[in-house]
Length: 202
Image 1 (cartoon, rainbow, N blue to C red):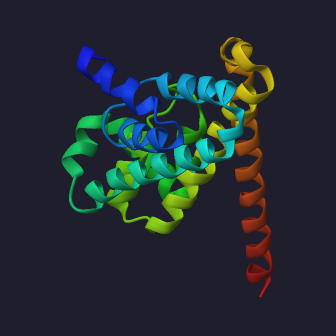
Image 2: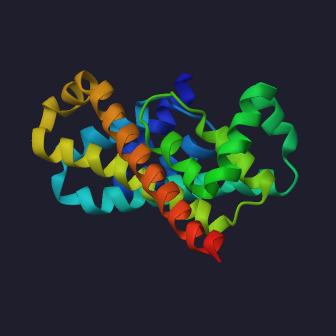
Image 3: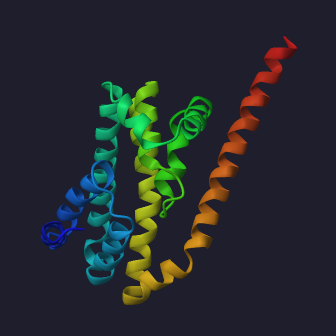
């Protein structure tokens, strides 16, 4: 981050939950800051536990709004941004996931706290494919609530040690998140097959 941006970041951070609302809009929609937002959430929750609920609401709301800005750009004809964001092969895999799982495909890349999956590309693709916007917004809000809620709880429970605990256990956290989502999608596919079987019998 440039010096001027760091200064702006510090000023927004000093505003507490309302500042976090603005920070997460920019982080999600315009200028990703790696894990800087995660660190900021943990440290603010540790320093001001009484504001933790408001911090969580503002962080989730800001990130969801930022995500829907990206979605709207793609929905309005921003295919150029989608094509520049990933290779054709990766784009086709993302499109296939969205066709198969609809907005639920956005949950994992939005929830996982390290850059394993291109969240922004999923959002661009969801907009380009015309996935229903309310479902996309709910998927983003759910994923961010899990991610940011977990970080806030770490900050409140462990104080100054929370970030180190988070960094040491990131692989475990990611593994649990992936496992739970795999279970969710597996159950969803099983229910769909079970519902289809009586219709085949008819």
